[in-house]
Length: 417
Image 1 (cartoon, rainbow, N blue to C red):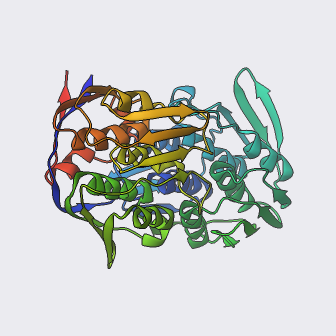
Image 2 (spheres, rainbow, N blue to C red):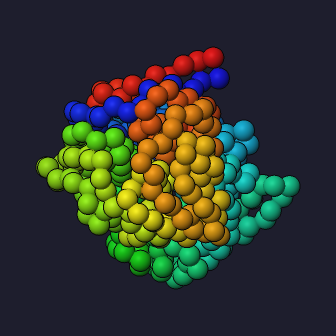
């Protein structure tokens, strides 16, 4: 079993690079199933989730080859419409294969997917959208069996702007007959990247990044080459780490407009930073003010940055309230932070935070991906030796995070016991 050993209390200096976005590359890999041509994706992070999605594509009949930061995907004419149970249950994002497989094969069979235990993420929005396009859905012993010999465009209103549902419907509709309009669609940058990728293959999608997406179906998709957008959550995590630890850190490969809610909260708290070309330079200090945050769908404050921001606020001056509006079980890091001396009180969907001068080192357990990032931040600020166990969660979303942090002066090593 692997763990991180961290000796905290050191200021950080230098430059740290952000990789391609995990939440963009996974649906784009799924969308490659629409094409029988060769797809090359650049700036692909080497993550556990990317490895799992590669195995899913291979299991469906595709070929996936990695060369450095690039993935080459060649699907051709595949026969399989059922993804292996053991792969799907490992990763929630695997559900996005439903749309493209249904579009190519007229049927898809998939188990209810797994992933981090941060709360219920129902698939009913996915299924409702696919049914609107003409699909028939059967639930058979824990499997979703969806069939549609012909998909036809429709007007679809999402009760909630689900990212995954928007992606699945968008991919299916891209190959449907006629025009599809998705209303109350998710607006995340990753949706825009997916639409741009599909358009590069010959798709006709307009409005991605707004709450109304117009999709004109096409019959064939070509191969293409596409560069994945930078990971805004990794960028935000590094920015918060730099702010918490002090020093002077430049975070490279950042699109600032993807981080507007985070940067607004840094301004409010008095944390100093500067936008520089494609990076953000953070000037950490020991004195910053408590601020309240409420997670919302994009363009609101991202739920994936709630945990590391909460960890930062444990040392802010004053009292802060963090409210989680997206997932009902995303405060599992709170108990671990309490063990480090943080003054935290959970009340329903909110955590009341009273800032303390410092945190104490401790042995900790990462309960999910973003909770793990929060614990790294906390451990790096606590003077002394901390351990973080269950770091496989972190490998799902942060590529070689300890190596990147070592590059800016963090004392963190991976230990295999």
